[in-house]
Image (cartoon, rainbow, N blue to C red; front, side, top):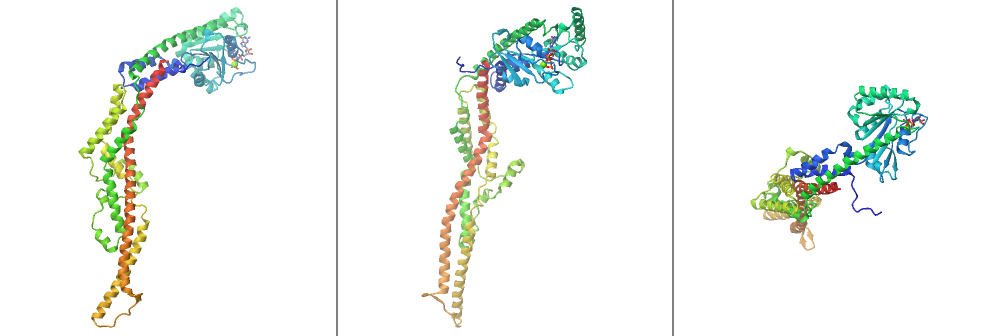
Length: 544
Ligand SMILES: Nc1nc2c(ncn2[C@@H]2O[C@H](COP(=O)(O)OP(=O)(O)OP(=O)(O)O)[C@@H](O)[C@H]2O)c(=O)[nH]1
Ligand SMILES: [Mg+2]
């Protein structure tokens, strides 16, 4: 048989989906539909919410009472292994009547051994019949297991035998504690074939009295024998009735779930809705934020500052000295710190020590552009959304509007502009400059000394010639020329470096700004869109 396109969801999954869809829609879709969905979800008690339309019935009791034998007798199978050696059953076992094993439910029940019973038994469809291990009260895990199953069981059948039906361990540790579940319990006195009719009547009266004294008046008790088949039909009927009742309850709930889910889906609408902020809008926002944060100003300042620092470091010592008196543009913006990576991270973690720049920002024009970008982002992100969700999207875009300037400034302040890297060559040039400067100074001094000696008519210094030119002249002119040449070449290097740095700085700033925008605007909006899309998916899944 061809599988249907859409997997048929189990009632349990649909109830869960409806509950989650209602939570996601809360505050955004009309309260009536959300409240109705919640009411329906609440109506589904734990049993229905986990087991859905499956009926869970478990056989519990002392070892040797005949749980496994009864299991086989009731189910008409030989799945359980009854035995003479005690205890026989040490892990729980379940048989499921239907076409597909409800694995999730059996996982919840923690049943390791599972059997599928197929066949023409519509009156047992959806039944999970469990054979629990001996309830020996000394084994804590067994008690925990019974406690676990009883929360979900539509019926818990306690199997006792004529010898141990009054066992203190059973009554004190289990039955008395289960008063709250009296209505879903049934006590079976098995091995009735071992008693004479009189003994049986007597034992049943005794058992009834015991149960009543424990507050279990509503718990029926029946006599049975797995061996002769006595009472088995009654048990089967009780089970069939329970299955039918469960199915009826489940099907009523199922249609309630469907109609509540339909109500939600109608409000979610069927318009095509973006799954995230459109890229173009995010880019637009980033651009306007970069402008408002003054990233262009910083880029220019980096360029100018690198030029100034480079020529200070590599220029001719004389011109260098003069330029020292011009201000550093980055220092004026309070961005001249070369924050080491480790320290930077600490600064990010420490909201009190917020670093501030002095970039002249927040101008009316820039601010207006940010507002426009935010409005457009909200508008195109909320296309097709119902009112409540589109309001939520708008609010998400504006939630941090007032913190944006500060956050952006902080992002700029902690961005590593990499101003302190890649300047090794400056030192080399600096040493060279000083060498040629000294050569020129010595040449000049030499000539000056010659001039003074000549004036005083003292004997001249010996003249040294390089080719046809005197050495001091070569030293003075050569040094000066070489100094200028080195300055010129380094100027080219500095210029290229400054441009590369300013581009890199702008990129780093853009990254910081994009990060801030992501955190303060894009992510909150995307969260809202996810909330809508997930809610709508779940609601339509809950329809079934
Ligand atoms: N005479 C008689 N013997 C029975 C009856 N039911 C079970 N027995 C026997 O009692 C013994 C124990 O039966 P089981 O069905 O294995 O008991 P259990 O409750 O599953 O035991 P554990 O798995 O050890 O917890 C077996 O030898 C069965 O043949 C019954 O109704 N009458
Ligand atoms: Mg057994």
